[in-house]
Amino acid sequence: MRILSLVILAVLLFGGCIQGSDSDSEPDQGKRSEDAYTRYASGFRVMHQGAYTLIEVIDPWQQSRDIIYSYVLGPDQKMLPPSLKELPFIKTPVKRVIALSTTHVAMIEQLGSAGSIVGLSGSEFIYSPGLRERIESGEVKDVGYGQGIDFESIVGLEPDVIFLYGVEGQVVGTLEKLTDLGIPAVFCGEYLEPHPLGKAEWIRFFALFYEKEEQSASFFRGIDSAYNFLAERASRVSSKPNILTGLPWKDTWYMAGGDSFAARLIEDAGGAYLWKENSSTQAIPLDLESVYLRAVKADIWINPGAALSLSDIILLDERFGGLSVLSAGQVFNNNARIVSSGGNDYWESGTVRPDLILADLIRVFHPDLLTDHRFVYYRQLK
Image (cartoon, rainbow, N blue to C red; front, side, top):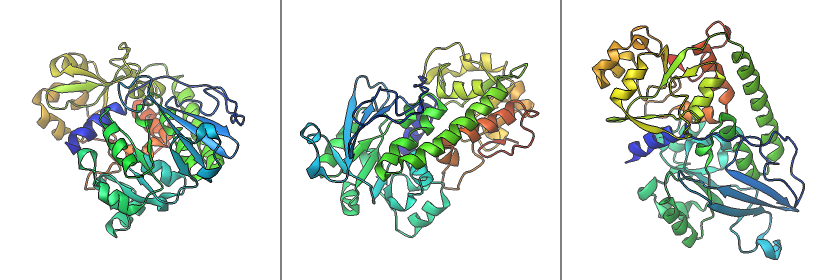
């Protein structure tokens, strides 16, 4: 079930598509428009109220609608105004945290606060060398996943907060159990953001817990600028290659929707996504036959699952060997930075560096456009 959940999450990481405000300004204390704190991310809102910060996390799992979780961050719960006393409180800056997603790990590490991580989920899927060293030394504990979460270990670690994510609404049961145990738990829905910069902007969410807002804002401005500079360059290309993405899971190909995260990256890199006419923001289940009929038009194939070679793809279904994109060797996977246990840095640091992912894809789609760029997350399969 752990592997199936990871596959589902990887598919969901390609979902979504609403861009926020273009405002760079910080919100006024106690007054703000909904989009004042973020430019792209739509899954959380921030309201500063004097020494305290109110965070709202919106619809944090797939298919959730009109669900909002509110949290108060600040130095002393006893000093909260009456209007905030009933909400979950997290004392900041946090010193000990548990992160249940590799994307959370990446954002915390980017903030220079990796030392605060005392627990995580799926330690075998961590790429970060520094964190792997701490895992192997026993300094960081694996607390399990889903129905296998070790609540006793979590209590023993005495975290200031645990960062949760859920693919489905059943995760509410985990939240209730943690609340009963007195463990502050916060939902995170960065994986549902449809825009690559929307996902990356969640670093500003995590920064609130460490009181590093200025640092995160400066970092994100640089990523935003770099990404849009590259996208503008790619927008001037005269022709766009047809792009196929993904690989089937058993008998179903979960193809990214035309308004999804994956489709946005392809478009911004100067590619023509073969399912761009589909208006879904999430993955759409397709049978292999219908995908194959359209795949014959592909010029480039990206993100073919766990494939490490062209032969891996053919072994999955021998019909793939008849596709011209494969026989031409135009297949590129986002697994250039992996560890033997399964950790892939594309799903870790790549979350906060969409500019590097975009540069890789531009190099794949238009090799003459970024001749000096060396692949970071991608590699051509042989």
